[in-house]
Image (cartoon, rainbow, N blue to C red; front, side):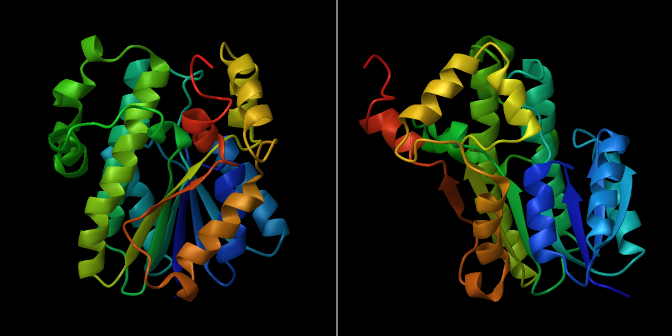
Length: 276
């Protein structure tokens, strides 16, 4: 029996992390689009990585449980890489909340029930979680600790309190960061660690959808005026994931790492500042 990594979301960032960390493991790849899962599994197999692919809907607890059960047929779950989600230009408010917010909460909870001692996980959040004004301590605690099945009932997440799909996405990513903190405590009871990464603009098919969407000019301006002066790459996100998931990161858990080329710094204190 091998140690097993679960990879949810068959995109460029998830694949880069899985290839970096998955040598010698069985990698169970789940994606809403089974063709995407199969394509990523095939690319990784051609690079010598042992993979299997199946359809998985992040918005469905049963679908998540089915992926975990299938993965366990190959061995103990030792790693989670969650790179699944939808962007503000890809889905309506309801879907963003059901997938990015609720689905991530359920996934962290379900994997946390079976992760082995010494196991690690990373979930991909977003710089967008840093763009909203601070929430109240009560709201932060609600996002972190409300039972997953009750999350979408919170007042802060009701349609009348959400301006548009970008605001929904920001709330989802803020929730991801808080959820990781709370779940890291539970994972720690099993001897496992959990962190999140908040990328800025990274060139992936999802990002290209954003470049070609209604906020394309906004994103172009963002990476042109951030200190790095460019978008990032999936491998640069994988560099940080490698630290977090390796023994070098053994003292890091319950944390979020912002990797955005300085875009958030520029948003608050530089040329990307609103109204400047």
